[in-house]
Image (tube, rainbow, N blue to C red; front, side):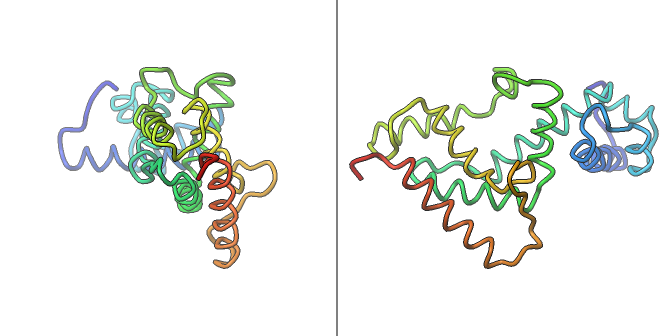
Length: 197
């Protein structure tokens, strides 16, 4: 990122660019997103966008890593209750479907294999430690903590905007979401609880 906004007006423009770019990238991906649409909707210009983010790829990075931080902060893990964590992830995907779409575009256009982000940019250390501690306490089934986390996240995404079976929306009847939450909670609880509990 080349420049940080120094004034409240600059900070507002910076945030408008991020907000508009989030929707643009979520809908069109990196290759399909258009800087012209972003600057028009954000009521700014290309020079300002490039001054703040350096390039379209730099803007995507800012949006994408911001979305990863949001998921970590808004839906913190509770490794002693992975079933509840899965349900809270499900709810966040309903509230902010753009976040999961961004991750999908990053997977499709940047990282088709391996971890979604480079090791220095990964935000899962705390989650992995929490799962390992819950395993050591006999609360969570044994297995590589990363694989346990990946399985719970995958289960929480069963009805996400990128599901290849069915993509749920917040506009569906509340009782339908409650049925899914109950099924998800029970499935994760059964799959991830240590055998002796």
